Every structure is written in structure tokens, then in C-alpha cells.
Image (cartoon, rainbow, N blue to C red; front, side):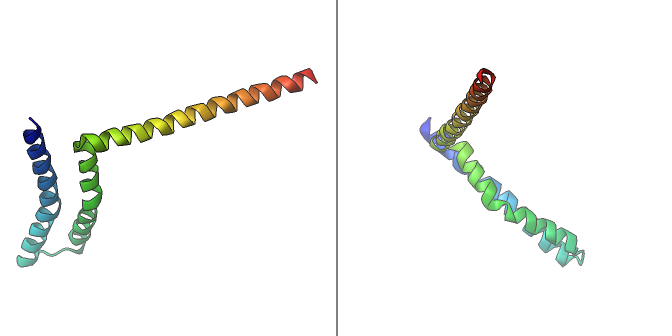
Length: 103
């Protein structure tokens, strides 16, 4: 089961870069070979290829349990910290309005 999961992750992590890098380069080479070169398509392909590292990192995080659990733990700590900070702010606002009424 563990080997099957590893093979699945490796196939996915290999297929996406090939598609992300290989297909645009192939289309670009074919278009220049047939004299159909367009600057617009070249710019689009460069933009697609520049997303390679972002997509590869996101795939690694999504496919690997240890990375995914770490990200969840970090996000949970951030959300917990924000909720406790906002509740402290509400308490201080209520406390300041209460003390002003007494005076």
C-alpha cells in the first residue's frame, strides 16, 4: 500500500512538469517550424513555464501527508491566534466602555 502510494505520487509529480514544460515547448517549436510564430503565444508559454516551481511545490504539499499535516497545524495556530486576539480586543473594548460609564 505504501509503495503504491509512493508510485502514485511520483507519477503525478512527474506528469505535471512534463505537461507544464513539454507541451508548450513542443507547440512553440512546431509553430516556428511552420512559420506560425507569434509573440503573444511565446509570452503565454513563458508565463506558463514560470508557474512550474509554484505548481511543483503545491503538488508536493498536497500529495505528502507530512507536509500537509504541518501546513494544517501552522494554519490552525494562526487562526487560533487571530481568534484569541480578536476576543481580547472585544473584551478590552467592553471593559473600557464599562469603566467610562462608571465615571
